Length: 73
Image (cartoon, rainbow, N blue to C red; front, side, top):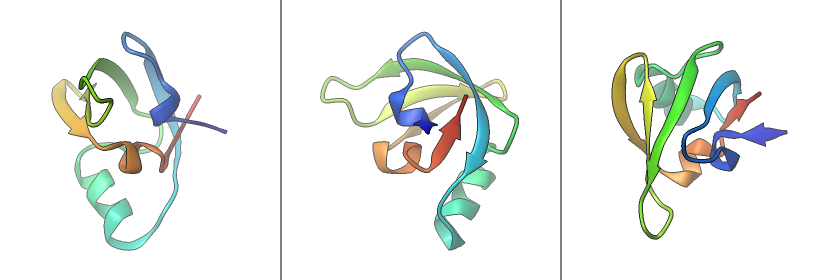
């Protein structure tokens, strides 16, 4: 199982599934991260958390904990 946390800078990945539940999953979906959407990894903070991605044409910062819940291909 590969998650968004495993993706490298400059890589584009496609979301397969969102793990987790309740309010956390809802928040991730509200940010535009849903099944089938492509995510481009723009850059990573010096200490590795958070990292910046492009989703549906806008930039978004995600924590590693949230990225672990997003399965990608």
